[in-house]
Image (cartoon, rainbow, N blue to C red; front, side, top):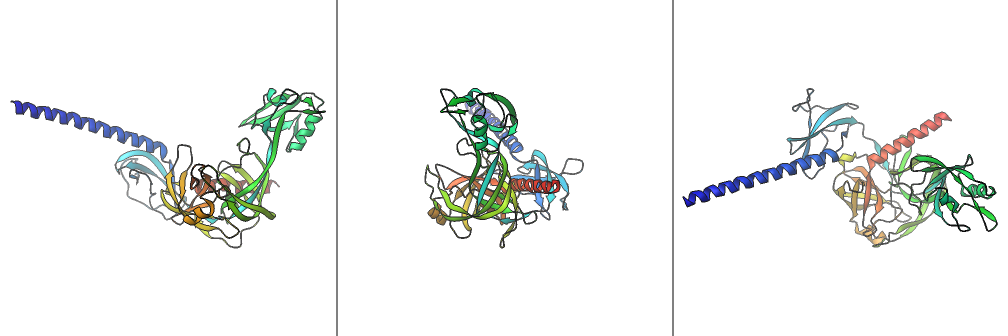
Length: 417
């Protein structure tokens, strides 16, 4: 009887344990399905002639073609350019995650960059970069203006230089000025009353109307001459706000070397602008800088564009110029895809030559194209302050969409002219 009780007790324990394990597995499975439902895109682009898209995930996720009725698995069929179809993404080949659309497109061929270039940017309006008291008060702050605001006009006159802002304020005679300004996406109006200080009327604010620097070209579209670079916006050094672009240009630079990066101190490329303008800057945004070249370089190598879902963890290399010579290939590792801070990828420099030259990633290398599996996968965007051998990257597909926007803007301006 005692043995029978022990057996029954063990069976009850085993049953409870099995139920708990099953519940935990089901919860983990549903959590994974929910995560991939949010993390995976709703549309997958594949190059003409390619098969089903490959899904790069930690757990195995596969794509299955849906039948016209919307259930079951249809026989695999080839798509022609411009066609699309519905796919079911499934975890472990059987657990449905979500329905997505596969689009067959002509894969763009892009001329890889890697060369440093000079950037000159004139702001759309003037940005407030600092405020200080004059004669015991700060008229700009008291009017409601803040550092980072972009002043568009004063008393109805559009302003684009800090000199003109100063002239209008000095000529006010202490009378209130109507200030039209932007803060983010919102435009507002306020009244600013200058005060007399040291024999001149002042507003207590300092503004910026332009910027210049060095970055790296990511790619050029040979068909449109649209270029992409940096992989991040040009921001004001003081406010760290994105500078609004009115007009700008790019030019050649002569790179003489670099200050090496070290922990806590990112280095930078050293160089000077040479020659005249080689292209027009049309777009400054979170994804980089974009515009149109006057002509294609005499020598260039084209690579197919990697769609975002094709980029995966593993070996890759970057093209980057670190001295007066040509861009060179340096090995890197793509350590992760996606980031809680919103970055597309995390990369790590593994090439001892580059580490010896630069300490890892330096300022000015932003825009260096990342090549993986023979395709342009992305671009370097940021260096980690505490570990300059690491940094962030952006998908090349995102940059290509911005480059197409710049090409369209240029075409529209030409038609309008």
